[in-house]
Length: 398
Image (cartoon, rainbow, N blue to C red; front, side):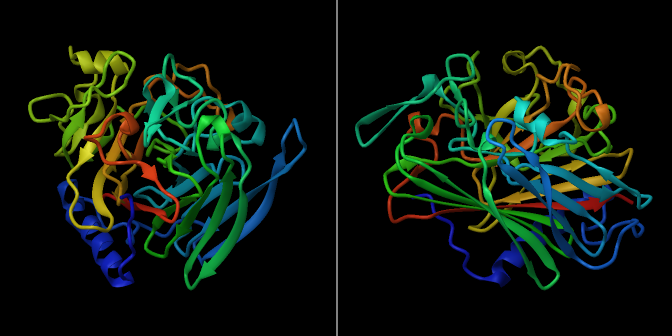
């Protein structure tokens, strides 16, 4: 049964603190709550609500929520697709830079096919042939990725309007976005009520809390799909970024990127990121799995510790000094190295987004889990509540 109970604030604090204090020493980083230098705009935590345009078809107004903590770190999210449009963090000199891909206006997100910053669902990642069964009943989904269903279908959660409510809890600011996915939407059974809460803390953490219920047995797999480039401003590629994944195994895929059903050890393969490794070091190795994904586009099986958020990944940019640590309650993380970015997409300030110009680290359940009984279940039944937390911790290398 897919449930995570928040047993106590103390247990959560210890889990997050442990994951943030163990890895920085590997590459000389400081803890995320200790940025190098005081960035411009630092002061008091705040949350603001502003307009972000109107949809071209319905004219419906879209809102943007601007979260800022006392260190000047800023996160922006909109009610269209529950999309994170901007994350601004300091480099080692204290200069703020935007470290996620996206667009300057709503029109870019309406046309977007890369899922920049979106909350993807009802099922993140791929389902083979868009088919699955629950209790012997078969369901068919729209296929939008070759023969498979991807990230919720033709009109997934990234293309719908959510309602938003901002909040302030002490020095933590945030927004809760909600959406009702109706029975039969994109072929999924059940009226699913979904919420995502983005919280920016004084410890320079972005908390992503997910929650879902349904009045019928259904499948749910939600993930935050931001594309990261720690250089800032969409500059360069991520091939020089150092990546660490707390994963001893991964799920190999077939030529359509559907898992074969096995879990393979990463040891001795280009998928071994258990120690900090440059993403470009082995990305073009003569490996069948890398050929299938045109690089990395694979689910890694996390070496979880305990019931709360467990450290999953660390990303570090030796050039800017920025670091990103990720802890999660999810069992897997999809590492996508921006292989299908081809220089044809223009993002913020007209910036051309280059091949492998950014990467996604999507905390989630495994791809095609509904068709793989050996994988952790993604079935959500009436009366149950899905709860999931991912913590993005921002820091700076010394």
